[in-house]
Length: 468
Image 1 (tube, rainbow, N blue to C red):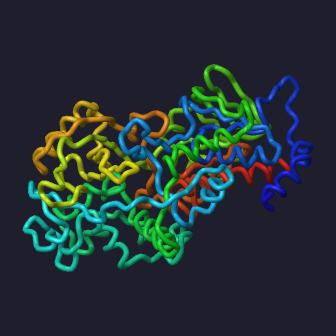
Image 2 (cartoon, rainbow, N blue to C red):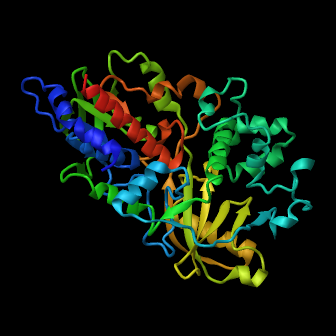
Image 3 (cartoon, rainbow, N blue to C red):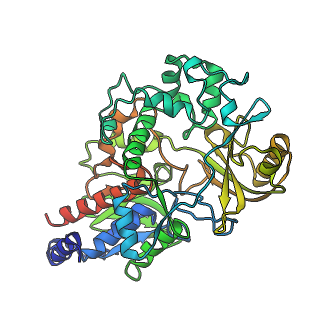
Protein backbone atom coordinates (compact mmCIF):
# COMPACT_ATOMS: atom_id res chain seq x y z
CA UNK A 1 0.00 0.00 0.00
CA UNK A 2 1.36 3.44 -0.91
CA UNK A 3 2.02 6.04 1.77
CA UNK A 4 -0.60 8.31 0.22
CA UNK A 5 -3.30 5.64 0.20
CA UNK A 6 -2.43 4.65 3.77
CA UNK A 7 -2.83 8.24 4.87
CA UNK A 8 -6.14 8.56 3.07
CA UNK A 9 -7.52 5.31 4.45
CA UNK A 10 -6.32 6.17 7.95
CA UNK A 11 -8.45 9.31 7.85
CA UNK A 12 -11.57 7.66 6.47
CA UNK A 13 -13.24 7.16 9.85
CA UNK A 14 -12.45 10.72 10.86
CA UNK A 15 -13.85 12.02 7.60
CA UNK A 16 -17.14 10.19 8.01
CA UNK A 17 -17.41 11.40 11.59
CA UNK A 18 -16.74 15.03 10.68
CA UNK A 19 -18.69 15.24 7.43
CA UNK A 20 -21.61 17.67 7.61
CA UNK A 21 -24.84 16.12 8.83
CA UNK A 22 -27.62 16.64 6.28
CA UNK A 23 -30.37 19.01 7.33
CA UNK A 24 -33.59 17.40 8.44
CA UNK A 25 -35.44 16.08 5.43
CA UNK A 26 -32.40 16.26 3.13
CA UNK A 27 -31.15 12.95 1.79
CA UNK A 28 -27.75 13.41 0.19
CA UNK A 29 -26.94 11.41 -2.92
CA UNK A 30 -23.30 11.13 -1.84
CA UNK A 31 -20.59 12.79 0.21
CA UNK A 32 -19.28 14.38 -2.98
CA UNK A 33 -20.94 14.91 -6.35
CA UNK A 34 -18.56 15.20 -9.30
CA UNK A 35 -19.71 16.69 -12.57
CA UNK A 36 -17.94 15.11 -15.51
CA UNK A 37 -16.29 11.72 -16.00
CA UNK A 38 -13.19 12.95 -17.78
CA UNK A 39 -9.69 12.44 -16.43
CA UNK A 40 -9.93 14.92 -13.57
CA UNK A 41 -13.33 13.71 -12.40
CA UNK A 42 -12.43 10.03 -12.51
CA UNK A 43 -9.11 10.62 -10.77
CA UNK A 44 -10.67 12.73 -8.01
CA UNK A 45 -13.34 10.08 -7.48
CA UNK A 46 -10.74 7.35 -7.14
CA UNK A 47 -8.87 9.37 -4.50
CA UNK A 48 -12.01 10.22 -2.54
CA UNK A 49 -13.25 6.64 -2.57
CA UNK A 50 -9.87 5.48 -1.29
CA UNK A 51 -10.48 7.82 1.66
CA UNK A 52 -13.84 6.22 2.39
CA UNK A 53 -16.09 8.86 0.89
CA UNK A 54 -19.17 8.06 -1.17
CA UNK A 55 -18.94 9.67 -4.60
CA UNK A 56 -21.48 10.19 -7.36
CA UNK A 57 -20.24 11.19 -10.82
CA UNK A 58 -22.81 12.70 -13.17
CA UNK A 59 -21.71 12.43 -16.80
CA UNK A 60 -23.71 13.73 -19.76
CA UNK A 61 -22.16 11.35 -22.28
CA UNK A 62 -22.86 7.65 -22.63
CA UNK A 63 -19.19 6.82 -22.08
CA UNK A 64 -16.53 7.91 -19.58
CA UNK A 65 -13.38 9.67 -20.72
CA UNK A 66 -14.45 13.13 -21.87
CA UNK A 67 -11.87 14.44 -24.32
CA UNK A 68 -9.96 11.17 -24.19
CA UNK A 69 -11.26 9.37 -27.26
CA UNK A 70 -9.48 6.55 -29.07
CA UNK A 71 -11.04 6.04 -32.50
CA UNK A 72 -11.35 2.26 -32.42
CA UNK A 73 -13.41 2.32 -35.63
CA UNK A 74 -10.73 4.11 -37.70
CA UNK A 75 -7.87 2.09 -39.23
CA UNK A 76 -4.74 2.58 -37.14
CA UNK A 77 -6.88 3.55 -34.11
CA UNK A 78 -5.74 7.20 -33.97
CA UNK A 79 -6.55 9.38 -31.00
CA UNK A 80 -9.43 11.79 -31.30
CA UNK A 81 -8.27 13.53 -28.12
CA UNK A 82 -5.42 13.32 -25.60
CA UNK A 83 -2.57 11.05 -26.59
CA UNK A 84 0.99 11.69 -25.38
CA UNK A 85 2.18 10.47 -21.98
CA UNK A 86 5.15 12.67 -21.17
CA UNK A 87 8.05 11.54 -19.03
CA UNK A 88 6.97 14.01 -16.32
CA UNK A 89 3.43 12.58 -16.20
CA UNK A 90 3.99 11.00 -12.79
CA UNK A 91 0.33 10.71 -11.78
CA UNK A 92 -0.70 9.16 -15.05
CA UNK A 93 2.18 6.71 -15.12
CA UNK A 94 1.66 5.62 -11.51
CA UNK A 95 -2.09 5.22 -11.97
CA UNK A 96 -1.61 3.27 -15.20
CA UNK A 97 0.77 0.97 -13.33
CA UNK A 98 -1.76 0.49 -10.51
CA UNK A 99 -4.53 -0.27 -13.02
CA UNK A 100 -2.42 -2.65 -15.10
CA UNK A 101 -2.60 -0.42 -18.18
CA UNK A 102 0.69 -0.55 -20.11
CA UNK A 103 2.49 2.66 -21.07
CA UNK A 104 4.61 1.91 -24.13
CA UNK A 105 6.91 3.77 -26.55
CA UNK A 106 5.64 5.09 -29.84
CA UNK A 107 6.60 2.97 -32.84
CA UNK A 108 8.97 4.57 -35.35
CA UNK A 109 7.24 7.19 -37.47
CA UNK A 110 8.26 9.74 -40.11
CA UNK A 111 10.28 12.68 -38.84
CA UNK A 112 9.84 14.87 -41.90
CA UNK A 113 6.80 16.52 -43.42
CA UNK A 114 6.40 18.04 -46.85
CA UNK A 115 5.54 21.73 -47.17
CA UNK A 116 2.72 22.69 -49.54
CA UNK A 117 2.52 26.42 -50.19
CA UNK A 118 0.96 28.37 -53.06
CA UNK A 119 0.14 25.13 -54.84
CA UNK A 120 3.68 23.70 -54.77
CA UNK A 121 4.66 20.69 -52.66
CA UNK A 122 8.29 20.48 -51.59
CA UNK A 123 10.60 18.83 -49.10
CA UNK A 124 11.12 20.82 -45.90
CA UNK A 125 14.78 21.21 -46.84
CA UNK A 126 13.74 23.20 -49.93
CA UNK A 127 11.62 25.69 -48.02
CA UNK A 128 14.44 28.05 -46.99
CA UNK A 129 15.21 28.98 -50.60
CA UNK A 130 11.66 28.71 -51.92
CA UNK A 131 10.15 31.84 -53.51
CA UNK A 132 6.93 31.01 -51.64
CA UNK A 133 8.73 31.60 -48.32
CA UNK A 134 7.93 35.09 -46.95
CA UNK A 135 9.75 34.75 -43.62
CA UNK A 136 12.33 37.38 -42.60
CA UNK A 137 16.00 36.51 -43.19
CA UNK A 138 17.09 34.73 -39.98
CA UNK A 139 13.85 32.73 -39.88
CA UNK A 140 13.74 31.55 -43.52
CA UNK A 141 15.11 28.07 -42.70
CA UNK A 142 12.15 27.44 -40.38
CA UNK A 143 9.04 25.69 -41.68
CA UNK A 144 5.68 27.34 -40.97
CA UNK A 145 4.87 24.70 -38.35
CA UNK A 146 8.12 25.34 -36.46
CA UNK A 147 8.60 29.09 -36.84
CA UNK A 148 6.58 30.28 -33.84
CA UNK A 149 8.06 27.72 -31.45
CA UNK A 150 11.64 28.45 -32.48
CA UNK A 151 11.18 32.21 -32.51
CA UNK A 152 9.54 32.16 -29.07
CA UNK A 153 12.16 29.77 -27.73
CA UNK A 154 14.91 32.29 -28.39
CA UNK A 155 13.42 34.65 -25.81
CA UNK A 156 11.52 32.42 -23.39
CA UNK A 157 11.51 34.22 -20.01
CA UNK A 158 10.05 31.29 -18.04
CA UNK A 159 12.63 29.66 -15.79
CA UNK A 160 10.33 26.82 -14.72
CA UNK A 161 6.88 25.41 -15.37
CA UNK A 162 5.27 27.60 -12.69
CA UNK A 163 6.55 30.95 -13.95
CA UNK A 164 3.78 31.43 -16.53
CA UNK A 165 1.39 32.45 -13.75
CA UNK A 166 3.69 35.35 -12.85
CA UNK A 167 4.00 36.86 -16.33
CA UNK A 168 4.07 40.66 -16.40
CA UNK A 169 1.29 42.51 -18.22
CA UNK A 170 3.86 44.00 -20.60
CA UNK A 171 4.97 40.51 -21.68
CA UNK A 172 1.47 39.04 -21.96
CA UNK A 173 0.95 40.07 -25.58
CA UNK A 174 -0.54 38.21 -28.52
CA UNK A 175 1.57 35.77 -30.49
CA UNK A 176 0.79 37.89 -33.54
CA UNK A 177 2.25 41.02 -31.97
CA UNK A 178 5.27 39.03 -30.79
CA UNK A 179 5.99 37.83 -34.33
CA UNK A 180 5.40 41.27 -35.81
CA UNK A 181 8.03 42.61 -33.44
CA UNK A 182 10.52 40.15 -34.95
CA UNK A 183 9.80 41.26 -38.50
CA UNK A 184 7.19 38.70 -39.58
CA UNK A 185 4.89 40.48 -42.01
CA UNK A 186 1.20 39.79 -42.55
CA UNK A 187 1.87 37.05 -45.14
CA UNK A 188 4.32 35.32 -42.79
CA UNK A 189 1.91 35.45 -39.89
CA UNK A 190 -0.90 34.06 -42.05
CA UNK A 191 1.18 30.96 -42.82
CA UNK A 192 2.00 30.42 -39.15
CA UNK A 193 -1.64 30.95 -38.20
CA UNK A 194 -2.66 27.95 -40.29
CA UNK A 195 -0.84 25.51 -38.00
CA UNK A 196 -1.33 27.32 -34.70
CA UNK A 197 -2.53 25.18 -31.79
CA UNK A 198 -5.01 27.92 -30.99
CA UNK A 199 -7.71 29.91 -32.73
CA UNK A 200 -5.78 32.94 -33.98
CA UNK A 201 -2.39 34.56 -33.47
CA UNK A 202 -4.23 37.77 -32.62
CA UNK A 203 -6.11 36.23 -29.68
CA UNK A 204 -3.44 33.77 -28.48
CA UNK A 205 -1.11 34.92 -25.71
CA UNK A 206 2.58 34.28 -26.36
CA UNK A 207 2.61 32.94 -22.78
CA UNK A 208 0.92 29.78 -24.10
CA UNK A 209 3.92 29.14 -26.34
CA UNK A 210 6.50 29.88 -23.65
CA UNK A 211 4.69 27.60 -21.23
CA UNK A 212 4.58 24.80 -23.81
CA UNK A 213 8.28 25.17 -24.55
CA UNK A 214 9.15 25.05 -20.85
CA UNK A 215 7.17 21.85 -20.40
CA UNK A 216 8.64 20.31 -23.57
CA UNK A 217 12.17 21.01 -22.35
CA UNK A 218 11.51 19.44 -18.97
CA UNK A 219 10.00 16.35 -20.59
CA UNK A 220 12.65 16.01 -23.30
CA UNK A 221 15.40 16.02 -20.69
CA UNK A 222 13.98 12.73 -19.39
CA UNK A 223 13.28 11.08 -22.74
CA UNK A 224 10.61 10.86 -25.43
CA UNK A 225 6.89 10.77 -24.74
CA UNK A 226 5.09 7.43 -24.59
CA UNK A 227 1.50 6.34 -25.18
CA UNK A 228 -1.13 4.10 -23.63
CA UNK A 229 -1.07 0.65 -25.22
CA UNK A 230 -4.22 0.16 -27.27
CA UNK A 231 -5.17 3.82 -27.05
CA UNK A 232 -5.72 6.47 -24.39
CA UNK A 233 -9.32 5.35 -23.87
CA UNK A 234 -8.02 2.15 -22.31
CA UNK A 235 -6.73 4.30 -19.44
CA UNK A 236 -10.01 6.12 -18.75
CA UNK A 237 -11.98 2.90 -19.16
CA UNK A 238 -9.80 1.21 -16.54
CA UNK A 239 -10.01 4.24 -14.27
CA UNK A 240 -13.82 4.20 -14.47
CA UNK A 241 -13.94 0.44 -13.87
CA UNK A 242 -11.86 0.84 -10.69
CA UNK A 243 -14.58 2.91 -9.00
CA UNK A 244 -17.24 1.50 -6.70
CA UNK A 245 -20.42 0.17 -8.24
CA UNK A 246 -22.95 2.94 -8.70
CA UNK A 247 -20.40 5.76 -8.59
CA UNK A 248 -20.65 6.60 -12.28
CA UNK A 249 -23.99 7.68 -13.73
CA UNK A 250 -23.79 8.09 -17.50
CA UNK A 251 -26.25 9.88 -19.76
CA UNK A 252 -27.08 12.36 -17.00
CA UNK A 253 -26.39 15.93 -18.15
CA UNK A 254 -26.44 18.58 -15.45
CA UNK A 255 -28.72 21.58 -15.87
CA UNK A 256 -27.92 23.60 -12.76
CA UNK A 257 -25.41 23.80 -9.90
CA UNK A 258 -26.11 25.72 -6.73
CA UNK A 259 -23.83 26.25 -3.73
CA UNK A 260 -26.19 26.60 -0.76
CA UNK A 261 -23.75 27.25 2.08
CA UNK A 262 -24.42 23.98 3.90
CA UNK A 263 -24.41 21.80 0.80
CA UNK A 264 -24.39 21.79 -3.00
CA UNK A 265 -27.39 21.04 -5.21
CA UNK A 266 -27.02 19.67 -8.73
CA UNK A 267 -30.03 19.42 -11.01
CA UNK A 268 -29.74 16.75 -13.70
CA UNK A 269 -32.51 15.14 -15.71
CA UNK A 270 -35.11 16.91 -13.62
CA UNK A 271 -33.74 15.40 -10.39
CA UNK A 272 -32.05 17.45 -7.67
CA UNK A 273 -29.02 15.72 -6.18
CA UNK A 274 -27.47 17.07 -2.98
CA UNK A 275 -24.13 16.50 -1.27
CA UNK A 276 -21.98 18.30 1.30
CA UNK A 277 -19.42 18.97 -1.47
CA UNK A 278 -19.22 19.01 -5.25
CA UNK A 279 -16.40 19.13 -7.78
CA UNK A 280 -17.19 20.61 -11.19
CA UNK A 281 -14.76 19.38 -13.86
CA UNK A 282 -16.74 20.65 -16.85
CA UNK A 283 -14.87 22.68 -19.46
CA UNK A 284 -15.92 26.30 -19.22
CA UNK A 285 -17.87 26.28 -22.53
CA UNK A 286 -20.00 23.45 -21.10
CA UNK A 287 -20.35 25.23 -17.77
CA UNK A 288 -21.62 28.34 -19.60
CA UNK A 289 -24.74 26.38 -20.53
CA UNK A 290 -25.67 25.65 -16.91
CA UNK A 291 -27.52 27.73 -14.35
CA UNK A 292 -24.71 28.39 -11.86
CA UNK A 293 -25.20 29.73 -8.34
CA UNK A 294 -21.92 30.50 -6.60
CA UNK A 295 -21.31 30.81 -2.88
CA UNK A 296 -22.47 34.03 -1.23
CA UNK A 297 -19.00 34.23 0.33
CA UNK A 298 -17.17 33.88 -3.00
CA UNK A 299 -15.08 37.05 -3.24
CA UNK A 300 -13.94 36.09 -6.74
CA UNK A 301 -17.41 35.46 -8.17
CA UNK A 302 -17.42 38.32 -10.71
CA UNK A 303 -14.01 37.37 -12.11
CA UNK A 304 -14.95 33.67 -12.08
CA UNK A 305 -18.05 34.34 -14.14
CA UNK A 306 -16.04 36.47 -16.54
CA UNK A 307 -13.51 33.66 -17.00
CA UNK A 308 -16.22 31.05 -17.49
CA UNK A 309 -17.76 33.28 -20.15
CA UNK A 310 -14.62 34.32 -22.01
CA UNK A 311 -11.79 31.79 -21.61
CA UNK A 312 -11.06 30.62 -25.18
CA UNK A 313 -11.02 26.98 -26.24
CA UNK A 314 -9.20 25.81 -29.35
CA UNK A 315 -11.30 24.62 -32.27
CA UNK A 316 -10.05 21.40 -33.84
CA UNK A 317 -11.55 19.31 -36.61
CA UNK A 318 -9.95 15.98 -37.49
CA UNK A 319 -10.76 14.56 -40.91
CA UNK A 320 -9.83 10.88 -41.04
CA UNK A 321 -9.38 9.47 -44.54
CA UNK A 322 -7.79 6.61 -46.45
CA UNK A 323 -5.59 7.44 -49.48
CA UNK A 324 -6.47 5.73 -52.73
CA UNK A 325 -2.80 5.39 -53.67
CA UNK A 326 0.59 5.43 -51.93
CA UNK A 327 1.34 8.93 -53.16
CA UNK A 328 4.53 9.29 -51.10
CA UNK A 329 6.09 6.46 -53.06
CA UNK A 330 5.04 7.98 -56.37
CA UNK A 331 6.44 11.49 -55.77
CA UNK A 332 9.23 10.66 -53.31
CA UNK A 333 8.11 13.28 -50.78
CA UNK A 334 7.17 12.66 -47.13
CA UNK A 335 3.77 11.17 -46.43
CA UNK A 336 2.94 13.86 -43.86
CA UNK A 337 2.32 17.47 -44.86
CA UNK A 338 1.95 21.01 -43.69
CA UNK A 339 -0.25 22.92 -46.13
CA UNK A 340 -1.51 26.47 -46.55
CA UNK A 341 -4.85 25.09 -47.73
CA UNK A 342 -8.03 24.02 -45.95
CA UNK A 343 -6.76 20.64 -44.69
CA UNK A 344 -3.85 22.40 -42.94
CA UNK A 345 -1.78 19.49 -41.57
CA UNK A 346 -1.72 15.80 -42.50
CA UNK A 347 -0.54 13.03 -40.18
CA UNK A 348 -0.18 9.33 -40.91
CA UNK A 349 -1.67 6.60 -38.71
CA UNK A 350 0.04 3.22 -38.70
CA UNK A 351 -1.12 -0.28 -37.87
CA UNK A 352 0.79 -2.69 -35.64
CA UNK A 353 2.78 -3.92 -38.64
CA UNK A 354 4.03 -0.39 -39.32
CA UNK A 355 1.95 0.06 -42.48
CA UNK A 356 0.01 3.24 -43.23
CA UNK A 357 -3.57 2.55 -42.14
CA UNK A 358 -5.16 5.99 -42.52
CA UNK A 359 -4.44 9.72 -42.59
CA UNK A 360 -5.63 12.52 -40.34
CA UNK A 361 -6.15 16.03 -41.66
CA UNK A 362 -5.78 18.27 -38.60
CA UNK A 363 -7.49 21.65 -38.83
CA UNK A 364 -7.19 24.22 -36.04
CA UNK A 365 -8.77 27.54 -35.19
CA UNK A 366 -10.49 29.62 -37.82
CA UNK A 367 -10.13 26.90 -40.43
CA UNK A 368 -12.24 24.49 -38.34
CA UNK A 369 -15.50 25.86 -39.67
CA UNK A 370 -18.43 24.46 -37.63
CA UNK A 371 -20.70 25.03 -40.61
CA UNK A 372 -19.00 22.35 -42.71
CA UNK A 373 -20.66 18.95 -42.76
CA UNK A 374 -18.80 15.65 -42.78
CA UNK A 375 -19.51 15.38 -46.50
CA UNK A 376 -18.08 18.86 -47.03
CA UNK A 377 -14.87 17.90 -45.28
CA UNK A 378 -14.50 14.61 -47.14
CA UNK A 379 -14.95 16.42 -50.47
CA UNK A 380 -12.40 19.09 -49.48
CA UNK A 381 -9.86 16.46 -48.40
CA UNK A 382 -10.35 14.49 -51.61
CA UNK A 383 -9.87 17.61 -53.75
CA UNK A 384 -6.80 18.78 -51.82
CA UNK A 385 -5.03 15.42 -52.03
CA UNK A 386 -5.80 15.25 -55.74
CA UNK A 387 -4.42 18.78 -56.20
CA UNK A 388 -1.31 18.37 -54.08
CA UNK A 389 -0.39 14.68 -54.30
CA UNK A 390 -2.26 13.36 -57.33
CA UNK A 391 -4.53 10.90 -55.54
CA UNK A 392 -8.00 10.84 -54.07
CA UNK A 393 -9.11 9.84 -50.59
CA UNK A 394 -12.01 8.00 -49.01
CA UNK A 395 -13.60 9.69 -46.02
CA UNK A 396 -13.88 7.67 -42.81
CA UNK A 397 -14.75 9.90 -39.87
CA UNK A 398 -14.83 13.53 -38.74
CA UNK A 399 -14.09 14.44 -35.11
CA UNK A 400 -15.14 17.91 -33.99
CA UNK A 401 -14.00 19.88 -30.99
CA UNK A 402 -15.69 23.26 -31.36
CA UNK A 403 -18.39 25.47 -29.90
CA UNK A 404 -21.17 23.34 -31.38
CA UNK A 405 -20.21 20.46 -29.07
CA UNK A 406 -22.14 21.07 -25.82
CA UNK A 407 -19.99 18.80 -23.63
CA UNK A 408 -16.62 20.29 -24.57
CA UNK A 409 -16.92 23.53 -26.54
CA UNK A 410 -13.43 22.97 -27.95
CA UNK A 411 -10.36 20.78 -27.67
CA UNK A 412 -8.55 22.54 -24.83
CA UNK A 413 -8.23 25.98 -23.31
CA UNK A 414 -5.66 28.64 -24.07
CA UNK A 415 -5.06 32.07 -22.64
CA UNK A 416 -5.83 35.25 -24.52
CA UNK A 417 -3.59 38.27 -23.84
CA UNK A 418 -4.21 39.81 -20.42
CA UNK A 419 -6.22 36.93 -18.98
CA UNK A 420 -3.52 35.20 -16.93
CA UNK A 421 -2.97 38.01 -14.47
CA UNK A 422 -6.69 38.58 -14.09
CA UNK A 423 -7.91 35.02 -13.70
CA UNK A 424 -5.26 32.29 -13.44
CA UNK A 425 -5.09 32.13 -9.65
CA UNK A 426 -8.65 32.93 -8.63
CA UNK A 427 -10.47 30.47 -10.89
CA UNK A 428 -8.73 27.53 -9.21
CA UNK A 429 -10.16 28.41 -5.77
CA UNK A 430 -13.39 26.81 -4.53
CA UNK A 431 -16.63 28.73 -4.30
CA UNK A 432 -17.68 27.65 -0.83
CA UNK A 433 -18.40 23.93 -0.99
CA UNK A 434 -18.21 23.90 -4.79
CA UNK A 435 -14.75 22.96 -6.02
CA UNK A 436 -13.38 23.04 -9.56
CA UNK A 437 -11.01 20.86 -11.60
CA UNK A 438 -10.06 20.20 -15.22
CA UNK A 439 -7.06 20.79 -17.47
CA UNK A 440 -8.04 24.46 -17.75
CA UNK A 441 -7.12 24.91 -14.07
CA UNK A 442 -3.71 23.21 -14.00
CA UNK A 443 -0.64 24.94 -12.58
CA UNK A 444 2.32 22.75 -13.49
CA UNK A 445 1.21 20.63 -16.44
CA UNK A 446 -1.04 20.80 -19.46
CA UNK A 447 -2.87 18.01 -21.24
CA UNK A 448 -3.72 14.74 -19.54
CA UNK A 449 -1.37 15.18 -16.59
CA UNK A 450 -2.76 18.67 -16.06
CA UNK A 451 -6.24 17.19 -15.75
CA UNK A 452 -5.05 14.67 -13.16
CA UNK A 453 -3.16 17.40 -11.30
CA UNK A 454 -6.35 19.42 -10.84
CA UNK A 455 -8.43 16.38 -9.91
CA UNK A 456 -5.90 15.59 -7.20
CA UNK A 457 -5.87 19.18 -5.95
CA UNK A 458 -9.68 19.31 -5.73
CA UNK A 459 -9.85 15.93 -3.98
CA UNK A 460 -7.35 17.01 -1.35
CA UNK A 461 -9.23 20.27 -0.85
CA UNK A 462 -12.47 18.37 -0.24
CA UNK A 463 -10.75 15.98 2.17
CA UNK A 464 -9.31 18.90 4.08
CA UNK A 465 -12.63 20.75 4.19
CA UNK A 466 -14.48 17.64 5.34
CA UNK A 467 -12.29 17.41 8.44
CA UNK A 468 -13.05 20.94 9.64
